[in-house]
Length: 275
Ligand code: KIV
Image (cartoon, rainbow, N blue to C red; front, side, top):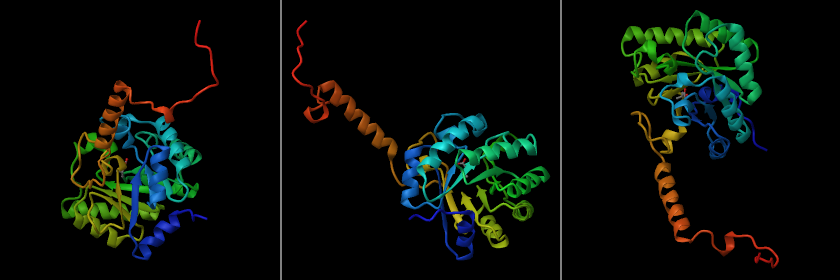
């Protein structure tokens, strides 16, 4: 019997000095294999806007899409903790809206939600969500939903003042009830500084080796998404070329009459083919 990973399991991993492996997934089969292969957390990231739906920005997806993809992933996962990413503007308008939308994520099958940023409003929301039984994975550093206010893709927390502000925010998110914290695109020194000074686990993406865990977009690490490759991505497979080679061979087989073969067709009793 597989033991389901909970937020307590994840927090104990930090206490025990164990690293946490997190990957994104957007569909049933990929989620199933990621779970079977041993990832601790499966994140249904709003990065699906870029890698699964072909948009330029994560701001292009809403609750409707996230609920469909979260349901598909949750149906594929037996053991890992499933986290649903709250999309742009699904939690920023009012606390009531945020709680309702996060509740819908849990109804779709997520075990927790992720929300980006930290200000007084976000802190109140994290507290209310946690009190309502909805665990929150916080997210600091580069927060893609704020790309327009941040002024583009860039490493965050690069000077001492910015690093101290980020640590203060991390501490407040922990106090508000966040069970873990994603740190995206911060210097390794900042990843270490924050990880060592808060109790909850940190999950880094471009945040160096000292974070409690690491997260990568599965389409990046599997070499399926090839439009661009951030510096922190390590490719473990070349799915793009597996697809290209397989589809080329299939097209050749169809055109040459090599597909289907005898073992790939159905037969009936003798039928009259003459009109
Ligand atoms: O949407 C996403 O995939 C994410 C991770 C990169 C942390 O937010």
